[in-house]
Image: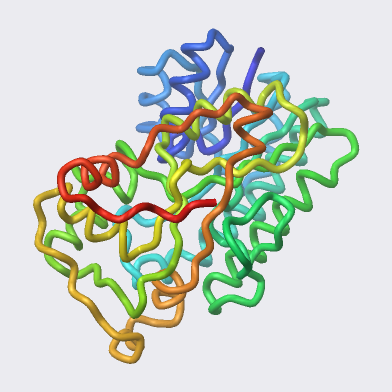
Length: 317
């Protein structure tokens, strides 16, 4: 199959391109820089340097490639994960996903592409009992930044799933971890904050996080090229509360325990940070397991914590 990947050199794009090439698909990756083009060539994929906001250029690239499927993984996120950096990047990221994504989607339809896959969220579900399934509502009434992100994802899903001439698939990924992600112990992002005790546990720490290794996310995306259209939660088997995973992550890196703040003490960090720590809802992956033969690995720092420190169980479904 010939596959066009928009956003081919991001955190998920790189392992996805590698997985597609390994599966003997013909891959054309869209990137915004010459550096990205060299990365794609290293993986054995063809590449095009295109500004996603340039509809004419996007049309020309997809028309020239004539792919069977398009995978949209466009993001514009900062290198380092901090509340300040994420807030500063939010508007450009939203614009790229909506406007740039619309251009890619339009070009795919114009070129007669049959299948279209897009990145969505598996960690912004609305409140409810237990773990969320794909039929549960997203958190439209969460804190301001999260509500804004949810509205963006809902618009993207409506665009992709509502096109009668395309087989649309929305992949609701969990929080990425693994090489090149914010949760990579070898990067100066969340890991550095944890080492410097700048990533606190807040309040009850009851916010439930659904993680996914980027290589497992890539494998699920690969499988979705031939699955039934629709929405899939691409998350791990063991969603865990922040009070469990964050201390385990610190121990995994031999870092000091995270400091603890009350919700009142954390007010200066903003309502989104408090929501993440106390109100996130985890998700189930049953549908992806059944339809995509999805088999994610266990979060490595939770596995080590269970073996070495006797950490409590993660949240069950």
